[in-house]
Every structure is written in structure tokens, then in C-alpha cells.
Image 1 (cartoon, one colour):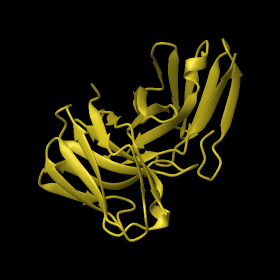
Image 2 (cartoon, helix red, strand yellow):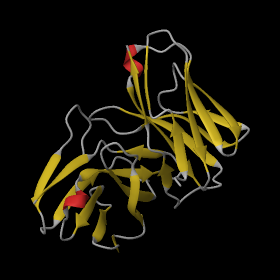
Image 3 (cartoon, helix red, strand yellow):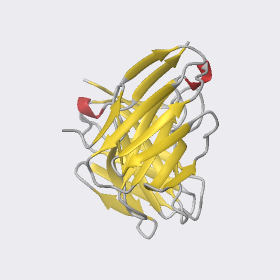
Image 4 (cartoon, chains in turn orange, brown):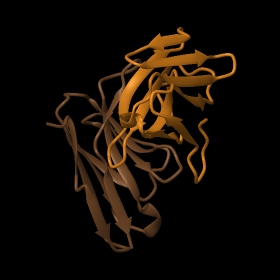
Length: 111
Length: 113
């Protein structure tokens, strides 16, 4: 899961397996959540988003789940591929439009 | 062509020097942002601008200044660089409010010796 600190949480999965990356957010009034993927040497890239009035949203090979009761967000990647190796982090947007980012989780896909 | 570009991509400078990082976007977005990223930490907001005449401090604005020269351009300056400003700097744009994602540039790696 996400945490702030000097060392990123890491997740290592076998190619073809499913990956689940977790994020705990802080503001119960946050209205909108985004997952980003950041590959080495590149800027963050949008993956998928979800509004607070939803608890699940699916994209291509990715699913985001939102549990507002425990302020938890997860990103599921199906059939993980080597190209999925990156740092993934969540962002929450509050009602006053401020964005806060998690520190990220490093996903490594083993061939 | 990239929608959000940053120059330079890498810069090494010395303590006390003035540095300017530039950002340009072709997305036509009104909102532009500057973040820094440090190892193991999330993105932290330095400054943001909602339009050409609007500049706002972010979470960590001390030691930085910005200029919004046009809708498409937003530059970040370090008036007198110090070693703890060594970081990866990202520019981002966003169309408007609510359910709009940010689009990030490729980043500028700045090292202050």
C-alpha cells in the first residue's frame, strides 16, 4: 500500500498474474480519485479515475475499487505484463479542488 | 508531439545560482502546475495558475517563484538554488475543475551542488 517515506512500497508479480495496488487516502470529503502510472524517466500518466459516488470502475485490463467507509482505493491490473512495471500512485481531489498525491508503489513484473 | 514539454530535461547547477525551468503546453488548458518529486515522497505542489493573471502558492513555495507568460507557458524559477532543491520537477496542465485529470510533462531533473 501507499505510504510516505524514503522507501517506496514494492510489489513483485509474475507475468500473467493479477496485480493489486492499494492506496489509503486522507480526506473523507474527497470527491474524485485518479490512478497514475510513472515509468522510469517519464512523467506520471493517467490510468483510470473514479468519482466518489461510484465504488468500481473498469478500464482496459484495469479496475479501480473505492471503499469510502475505510478511505481505501485499489488498482487491479489483470494479466500483468512486463510493460506494466512502473511506480503507481493515487491522487485524491477534494471539494475545493486541491489534489494530494500518494508516494507510490513500485510494481515489478517478473518474466 | 508531446502535449506538455519541459526544458531543460536535466540541469546541474551550483548553490546560489539562479535557475529557470520552462514549461509549454499545446492542450489549450487554462490551469498549469509545478510540482517537485523526491525519492519516496509523493508529488508536492509548488505553485499553480488558473489563468494568465492568476498565480497561487502551493504547499512548498518558499525559495521558488513562477511566471505565467501566456496561457501555454508557465516557468518556475529558483532565485538562489540550494542543495535541498535537488529533485525532479514536473509541470502539469488541467482543463478545469472537478473530474479532469492532469497531464504531466516529462520532468526536469535538477541537481544543485
